[in-house]
Image 1 (cartoon, one colour):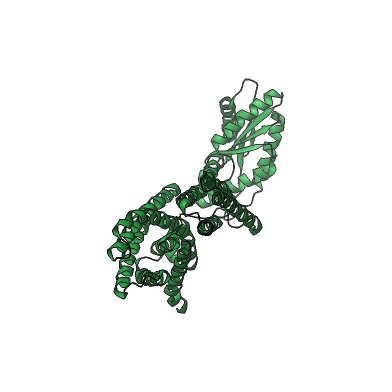
Image 2 (cartoon, rainbow, N blue to C red):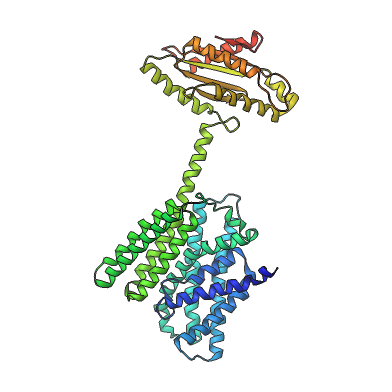
Length: 468
C-alpha cells in the first residue's frame, strides 16, 4: 500500500524532470526540439486513466511558475495561476481525448491488426498534439504571457515538439507502467508482444554509438556550412535507427529513438542550429514513424511463418498436410525420373478408428493418431515423407524404394504399430496398408487411386495387413 501511495509523487516528479530537461533544450522561448512531458501525459491517460488529472494539473501549474522564474518574467501570481490552470486543462484534455480514442478503437474487436493500431496512434498523436499546441499558445496569449500576433509563430514548432514527445516517450512510459501495473497495462501488451526477448547489450551500445556519431558529424557540418543543404543529410540517421529496429528488442528501439531525440535537441542548442530546427524535428518524427512500422515488419514475418506452418504441417500430428505432401510428391517424381530412380507410395489408416472414438472418446483417438505419427517419423528415413490425408488416413512417399522395398517398410511399420502402448487405451492398435510403386506414366492421382484400392482390399481381407 505504501508503494501505491507513492505512485502519484513518482509520476509528478518524472513529468517535472522531463519538463525541465525540455526547457533546457529550448531553441526559442516556449519551444523545444521535443517535449517529453506530452508523451508522459498521453501514456498516463492511456494506462492509468482520468484519475491522474489532479497530478497533471499540479505539474502544469508548477511548470508555469518554474518557467516564470527561469525567464525572470515577474508575472503576477494570479496570471501565473490562471495560465497554469488553463494550460493544464488544454494539455490534459488534448491527450486524454487521444488516449481515450486509441483505447476505445483498440478494444472494439478482439484482434486489432498491428498496422491499424500503429496508424491510429500516429494519427491521434498528430491531432492531440495539434490541439495542445494551438490551445496552449492561445492560452498564453489570453493570459498575457505572449502577444496574440506571436501565436502564428509559436504553434507550429510547439506542435511538432509535442508530437515528437508523444511518439517517442509514450511507448517507453507505457512499457514501464505496464511492467509495474500489469492489470492496467494488459490491454496494450496483448497487442504488442516482443519478438526478440533478449539480446547481448554490447552490440546494442555499438549501434547506439554509431547512430550518435552520425548525428554528431552531420550537426557539425551543418554548423560549419550553415548556408548549404547539408542539413538534409540528417535523414541518413534513419538507416542507423532501422538497423537497431530490425536487430534489437522493441524497448531498445524506443530507447535509441529517445536518445537520438535528446542528442538532436542538445546539438541544436549547443551548436546554434535553431534556423534548421524544423528539419531536425521532422527528421525525428519520421524516425519515430519508421520505427513503429519497422517493428511491425517482424510481426508480418512471424505471422507468415505461422500461416506457412499451418499450410505445411498438420496441427494435431505435426506431419505434412495433404496439400504440402502432394506438392512434394510432384517434386520427388520429377527428381526420381530425372535420375532414373524408383519411388513408391504407401497409404495406410487405423483399423476400426471410428470404434476407438466411439468407445474411448476423441481425446484418446487423437492420442492414437499422434502416437502412430511419431512412431512412423522415427522409423522412416529423413528423405521419406509422411502426410496426413484426413481423419485416420496417412500416406508415405518413399523416394529410392521400389515395390519390394516399400513393402518391407510397410511391414515393419505394421508390426511396430501393433506393439504401441497408448495412455488411456488398453487395446491393440492395428493399421492396414496399400503399397504401390509409381510407374513412368503415373502421376499422384493415378498412384493414389492404386494405393487406395489396395488399402480397401487389405481391409476386406481382414485388416492389419499389407497389400500390394
